[in-house]
Amino acid sequence: MDLMKDWNTYKETEEAQRVIELFEEGSLNDILHTFVKEGAAEFPLFEHTIKNVFEYSLIPYDVPIKDLFLYLIDSGLKGYLVASDFVFDIFLAEEYDFLIERMIPTSIGLFGLDREEDNNCYVPYLFYHNFSKLKKIAALSQVEMPLVPTKEQERERVLYYLDFCNVWNTFRKNNNLSMAELCTFLYNFAPQYI
Image (cartoon, rainbow, N blue to C red; front, top):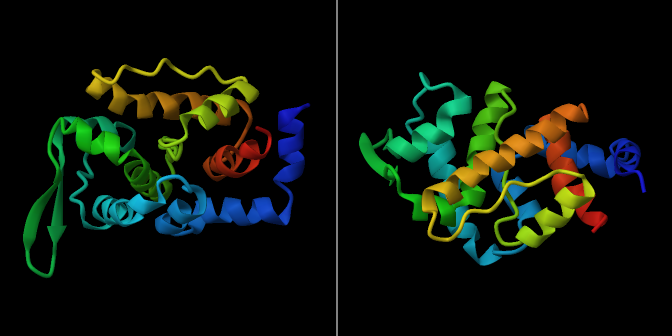
């Protein structure tokens, strides 16, 4: 089986083109509902998090987007409601348990911000409830995943998201994939192989 040859054939199909377009231009909630089947009961919380991270947050635009996740971990994130001139905490600095529980929507929100700036560093992390599927896709793709931190290593567990992004961005660059193609590969194409 030649995975990348099959990918190149697949990406020309109508199905692949629809999914690529979803990752290029679709709403973040549509991405959530299309690809996160496990944990559907958490969708209201996830949608709320995406809305806060993407629409109401006071993102510091002086921080380069590639450094934004680290900045947010260390500084927290504030939100702002224009209508009521109300500033609120979306999450506090070093609030690792919040981020661990909300890694799916947080990663989708970061992907949405990244997509607007076209820096291609944040990959949606949609395997939180099905890590075994990610491991199978990585093995099939000959991607060496970083070691998963222990439950007690809360900061490292949050930072694992950056390791995830780094290994898949390396794969993306090595295979000349756009970010939308990488996401389509991870969440629509590769799962059909496992």
